[in-house]
Amino acid sequence: MTSRERFLKACACEPLDRPPLWVMRQAGRYLPEYRELKAKSSFLHMVHTPELALEVTLQPLRRFNLDAAILFSDILTIPEALGQPYHFRDQGGIGMEYRLETRAQVDALAGPDAVGEKLHYVPAALRLIRAELGDSKAVLGFGGSPWTLATYMVEGGSSDDFERIKLLFYTDRPMFDALLGKLTDALIAYFKLQIEAGADAIQIFDSWGGIIAGPDYEAASLQWIKRIVAALPADFPIILYAKGTAPHLTDQAFSGVRAISLDWTCDLAIARRNLPANVAVQGNLDPVLMQTTPEIVRSAATRLLDSMRDLPGHIFNLGHGITPRAKIACMESLVDTVTSWDNANT
Image (cartoon, rainbow, N blue to C red; front, side, top):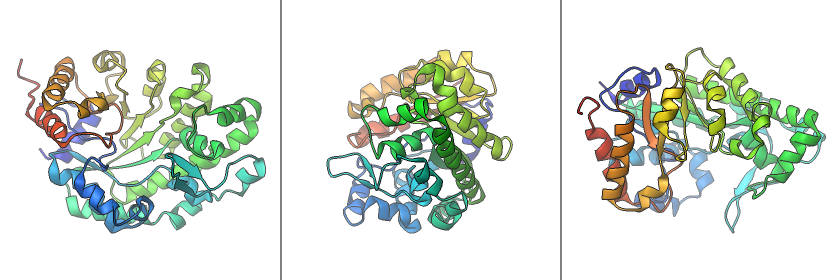
């Protein structure tokens, strides 16, 4: 069985001898070869250059026996394509070129046709990745959720309190819905491009889904994700990662996605037992463990694997992206633990 077949079977909740493994945000400063490349080229230049995106995407697979590769890109390519560029602040975090403050600014954003015109480098990179890997590994595309993208666009970049986006949601729903509608249409076009270019699955990152009040999660975020899933090919594997939204797992499970990625605060086995049998789960080792020791990683990963024994539909992953301070030895320990674990061995 190829790694690609293993990954797709896990998405379909078919039983496997071990879960497939990939790591969110595979590229990063924890790899010296990435740091070397980054010293010669800016992050945005690498994102915009298909050959460099290919190189960064493949770097983790050259070191580790992973079952899937995730496209090297950024969720903020969508605001950029719609007419709101971004940059990285000197003090850290994201800065948008301007802040969305008026309905006129929202109306001035480009429509979904801009996605194909401006983001041609994304499907180009995916085709290169697919050609390089063939059918041996799964290839994942991704994008941010409409709500998460809107937080950056309305806040003007990274935010500590998300006050502006919340105030927009509560005080000017027509403007909020207009913005989220534009983002939803753009993301549908974007994900279709990625699927046509060879992606085996799409992960939607609702990274800031947990900052809205619980009763408002559906209106602010989940309803827009449902619209995206409904517009994509039936039964195509869509994975939803929504940090800090454990109370909404059941609603997410009936959103049409094929898998839900859980953060490290959830008990994965309990979630698996409480979710529909046809919805896979992904996760959810605490990323900080990758800064400890290989022995600690092996123990924690084994405990997680054992808790999921005989439960189908598990894709092993971290509960969030791998951090720049992760140790290569810890990553090696994680990969060895997962790939050598046997579901049938009790």
